[in-house]
Structures are given as structure tokens and as C-alpha cells.
Length: 304
Ligand SMILES: O=c1[nH]c(=O)c2[nH]c(=O)[nH]c2[nH]1
Image (cartoon, rainbow, N blue to C red; front, side, top):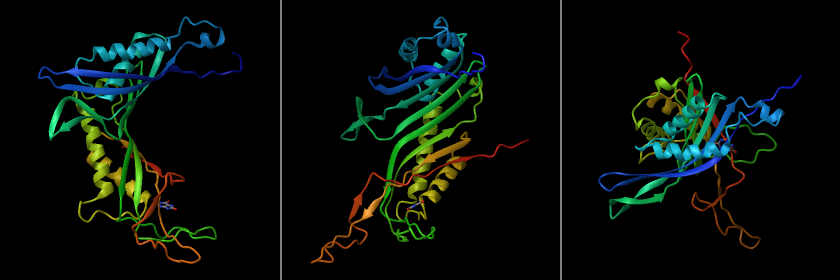
């Protein structure tokens, strides 16, 4: 390989698994995961000399997901399951130096019938819980959790004024508009090795619930008066700031908030100049184009 550098990884993407836990009282718990595994491993000969003797087959990686799901006798968060997988691949195979595990959990929620929780019935919700975990052979670790597809909308208390006006600008300034977005959030935990991850079974699920609540509380504001949004950027910043202020153990948070436009409807014709006059009431919902606004807010590391 003189004068050449090869960087490589291999893995199995989109391994789907469902897991049921049956409690003694007859209640069932259920999760459905989509797991992607990527291994950094010493198997250069497979690329350069057709020698596969150092390859962990991606089929074996897929099987490992089912074995480890079977071995989880108690409900487990996506983060902890990703750590289980990462630990396995990096400790079991001498060739593997790092494992990058991504999991997306499908939002199955217990169904309520006449206000009563069903023991074994679930319906699909909307936003998804995600994780990315990187485990190294040394035991060093990085854990990221996320929410995807949290669609929110408010019908007032939003505006956009004071932006650059030039010869291409036609957008009117407003203090009254619809604000709609589909929040994707991801946040990092400060745990740097396997030993420092909290042992509590529900730890990551509670953090997920806490972050989601803070994001929603900050986006919407109090139930009656709401909170005014001068821009998606400003609202995004306050949401990220609130996550860092109110959820301990989050060291940084990244938010993606597309600005999904609801266009005012005004209809006129030559004969009838006002068929429909927009009075903050009738909108044309759109998917594209949309504004794309994203930012990451981190705690500055103390140098002490
Ligand atoms: O909240 C907004 N931020 C923008 O950057 C922008 N740009 C735009 O056309 N409308 C909006 N709204």
C-alpha cells in the first residue's frame, strides 16, 4: 500500500428487532428497534489481499442483535442496548477497535381503552427515540440520544421582522404568523467510559422524557398566553438553553428545526378582486421548500 492510505469500516444497517417482556401480572412491555452497527476493525487484508480471515461477517453482527435482545431479561433503553452491543463487539473480537451503534425506536405506545391501560395493546405514536453510541476497546465511550420527528405548530405568538431587505426581498414583516416545525434533537452525555454510565435501568428513558418536556414547554410557553417567537432561530436557542439549564448530565444539544411554511391564502380574479381575503385564518400548508435552521449549544468545558 505504498503511498496510499485506506480508511474503512463495515457493519450491518437497519437490523429490525421487536422485543416483548411479559410481566408476572400479565402486563406486556414492547419495543421495536432498527439497529445499525458499524465496526472499525483491523481487516485490511480483506480489501487488499482478498483475505477474509479477520472479517466479522455482517450476518454475524445481525444475529448478535437477536442474541443480545434475547439475553435482556428486563426492559432496556436504546442507549443501554447500544452499549451492550458496543461492549460485545469491542471485547469479543481482537480485530475490532471501535463499534458505532445507531438505534431508532419505533414509537409504540400502550393503548388506553375507556381510560384503562391495555395489558398487551399498543398504537404507533409520532416522534422517535434515537441513539448513537461509540464504544472503544479501551472502554472509552460516547453516548448521544435524540428525538426525531417531533412535529409542533402554534397558530399565533410568532413573527419575523427586521431582517435584511434588498432588491430580491419580497417577504413582508409580520408579528402574526403560524409557526410550524418538525424538531430533531440530539444531545450528548458527559460519560467518557463504560464505568461512568449510570446503572439505573430507567436513566436514559427518564432523560428522554425530561428533554422532550423542556423542548415542548419552551416552544409553546404557558397554556393561555404562550410565548412570543421573534424567529425560529431565537426559539431554537431558548429551547437548547433550557435543555442545558434544566436537564442535568446533558453536555451539548443539537436542534434542527425546519421552518414549515403555512402561506396566507388570498384569492382574486379580474372580475372579483377579493374572493378570499387573508385574515390570519385560511392557509396553504406546504412541505417544500422549507427554511432549514439548526444549531448546537454546548457547555464550555471548564479548564480547571
Ligand atoms: O424564523 C424565521 N427565520 C428565518 O431565517 C426566516 N427566513 C424567512 O424567510 N422566514 C424566516 N423565519
